[in-house]
Length: 227
Image (cartoon, rainbow, N blue to C red; front, side):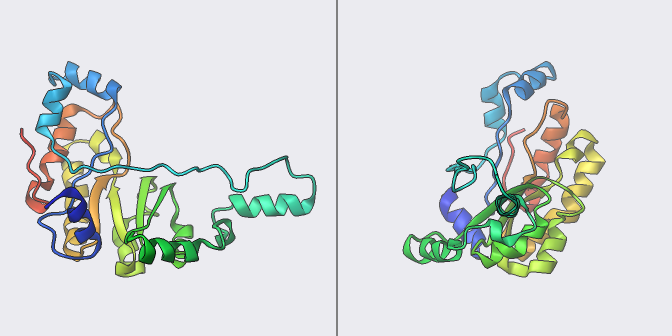
C-alpha cells in the first residue's frame, strides 16, 4: 500500500496495512550532536528509520483581509480583537463551511486538518463546525491536549495526528515507554489516529533515547527500524 492510500484508509477508519509513520524531520544541529554520540552520517540515519512520504502546502497565516492601518476607533479595536481571539469562533471565515464542503465533495479532499500549537482546545468545536475533521497539535499542553480525552469528548468525528509528548524523550527509557504504552495502542485500536511526537526533536534529546522511541512502534504500528 502506498503512503497516500495508507493515510486515506487510516483517516477513513478503514483497514490499512499499517498506519502511516510520519516524521517532522531532524534538524542539522541535532544530527551534528548525534554524530558526536555515535551516529556516523545522515545516510545512516535515513537507512535506520524509514518513514512514509508526505508533502505539505503551507497556507498564508497572515490576517485576511490585510491590515491596511492600525485601529483608530473602539469598533476597529473590537473587530481586531475578535480576529485574534482564539476563543471567538467568528475569527474563522464565515464562508469556510461552504468552502470545506466544496473541497470535500468537489475536489475529493476527505481530511481537513486543523493544525495548531499549544492549547487549541477551545477552538476545536468551532473548527469541527466549520468542516475540519482532523486535529494535528504541535508542542501542545500535555494536560489540556491529552488525545485520549479528546477522543472521548469528540469521538470519531475528530481524527488525530500526533499526541506523543516530545519532552519524555529527554527523560529516559521508562518515561518514553510509559508515554507510548499509555496513549498509543488504545488510540490505534480505535482508528483514525497517526502517532507522532508533538514537535521536532531538539538538540538536548540523546540519540539513544530517540532510537529507543523509534523501536517502540514496531509491534503496534508495524514499521521496522533497521537498528
